Image (cartoon, rainbow, N blue to C red; front, side, top):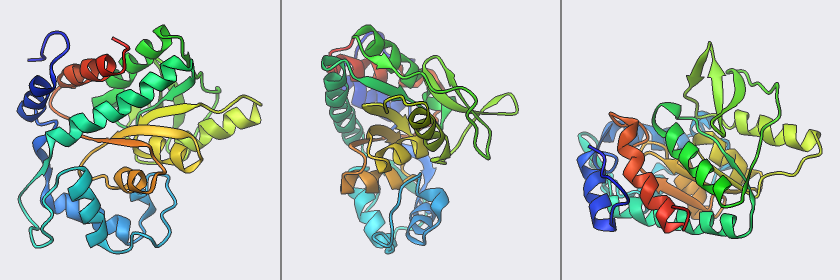
Length: 262
């Protein structure tokens, strides 16, 4: 069950492991390695709206980044079985993200929140948007009528999402964020000062030169590679779709408390 109130760091680490947001996560090793290989082989579906060129064409380099920033097993010969996310690295990432949220609140910045994983992270972003709005930030309202090949770009509870067939859609694509930023530019409106997102929403924003922070799973290496290059400012490692979205509530409470937004 969720921890009431705001957990301590130690309590949050324990909760992350118990709920498998971190620790021994559900994503198997073979899936992780497959995705690292796809990124290295230039499959843009795994690039999350980033332009990686040929800088990451060796999958062992990708594995090294993931071991350092996520806590997956660093042995290239370990190819099947359980893999891990280090919960201490998750909390470290939350604290770095909190620092950027604190700056946004202090400067009353324009912030855009978005998710390609609405089944898991929509409410994390919604709560973050509400706290930033209360602190005086402008939550960017996206232009109307935006769409991509996958569906329509909507905004629900202050969070940009992809809608397809009357359902919220899981997407890795950077195209929805491209549609938003292009739409803002065409309307003569300023771009966000900060994007808080995940998947290609965070990747494309960072590639476009907008400050970007986000969340990513152990089988989604692109944002961690981008963080290592400085294109994305912060990437928090976590399992982005656990059994219940309520399991993320203590994590969100900790993030907002660290940012001075609770």
